[in-house]
Image 1 (cartoon, one colour):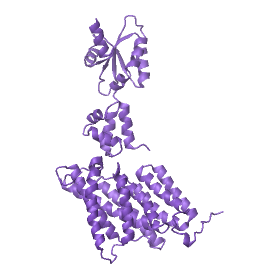
Image 2 (cartoon, rainbow over the protein chains, first blue to last red):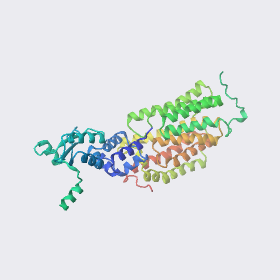
Image 3 (cartoon, one colour):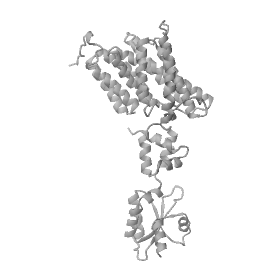
Image 4 (cartoon, rainbow over the protein chains, first blue to last red):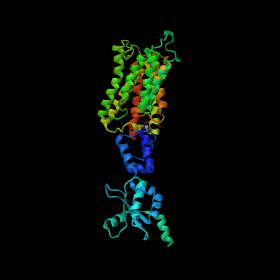
Length: 160
Length: 276
């Protein structure tokens, strides 16, 4: 039987969060308490355990950022030049807004979407970066660059 | 063909090294698995193995282990923690009461040997050493409990009590469990095991179950280094004094210190006279 301590530690490790970050995300607990729970020294009550497990649930954005390299490789195969991760609308799938190279084939957008979904084992909405589309424009404003990374983009700007 | 239990000559009873040790050890292991590790499958499996081997080796041991096993199964059926909500206290209190009453009733009215007894009024005055030991226990609790509870953080396994009604419920809960520990682990488990094993061995075996139960209650981290010797001491004290009243007094004095430490640990500005 998996103890609650093992369950909490496994959930946090999957999420990639530090104990401190998890405590902040869960609220009402601090890093020291998370440490005590994970070591089985203190048993959290059901409400606290549930709150921590919920907070440790990987966020789509975090999962995307953890797989940047693989998504970049998929992007290269499909002539993708830029990817923004936008916060999904409540209840929606994570949104990727992509720019394609002029040489991209018509099926590159859908090919990219399918491969990314296979990689993440989750539904992802992939939209073409179209400034004329109000929703895309709105999402893009709140998005964060996944590809190229912020550092790479900055470096390339400096070099240019 | 029905397996006949091996006949144990009377002179061989209560020997440390005999086949009877196997079910005795299995019983202790089941306690560790059930309460210490929370593994029901392994715990019930070890308990069943203890009963089966006892049935084959010694029918009298089997009958007594059935009583202990009944109590252990009853308490394993409810969550054992320090939740002081009325509902949980009623549920846990009922299970603990049954775990003592069932072995007592079966021993008295089914087996008719009345092996399980709760000697409250022994008619003996407590000796000077016994009275001094009570003072020593308070001093021991004062020296160990604040350090153990606060340095490890295990006090958080007990609810944060800062309101009077919660404090009263925690006080009642801590004391009720303290009394129950002596009724079940000392007057029932230890007493029944003593009929088949030397006193020291019976004490060693019961202390494993006793300290495992305390682990599940919240005595984590290095708690067993504290609770196992305490369980041994309680068994030994009962053997010496033959008095439930005395061992309960010892336990409740220790628990009084525990209660005060818990209040302080959750409200550091209160009862600020502990050293840790």
